[in-house]
Amino acid sequence: MNRRWLVTVLALACAVVVAPVQSMGQATGAPTGQRLRLRLTIPSFSDAGPIPLPFTCYADGKKAISPALRWANAPATTRSFVVMLTGPENHRRGGHTVAFFWGRWNIPGTATQLAEGQPVGVEQSDGSRHMASDDGILGYDPPCAPPGAGPIHYQYKLYALDQMLSLPADATREAVLQAMEGHIVGASVYYGTLERAQ
Image (tube, rainbow, N blue to C red; front, side, top):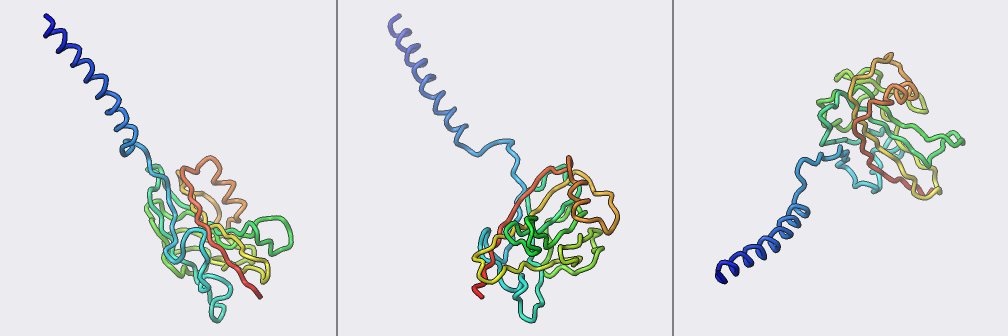
């Protein structure tokens, strides 16, 4: 009888010790069923790092090109992407609005990148369209930090939408932003800095 009682006590003790260990293993192990977040990367420079001069207004011969953009982990409901480049600290017009350098909408939801040196013009070969920048450029309008202003930050932003946008080909940034409302299923921001001493 004592022997049975001892076996029972030992079995219960083992169960008490093992259960927390298993729980801890589940808590610290790889998460199951957790969705990865949309992630934008720019191979040419590190996040929050200096933007190489070929992608700025200081490029040789002032012939700037757009950097390559890559992204992963788009939500399953993604039907299109929107790309924007803004300069929150770069008030080129002397006001308090965010400077707008580049915008492209209705990039197909199956896309995972934009190659370096994207062409200018409203309509692109993949069916996407450019918005006019603050300077009226339909394409990549390179960042141009004011000399002596210190490091200026720029935001390359990617939005995943659950639909293609039904807008006129020459839609403005404001129109695109308004049409995006309620349809953003993912977003990612990649930062770059630019500084000119003189």
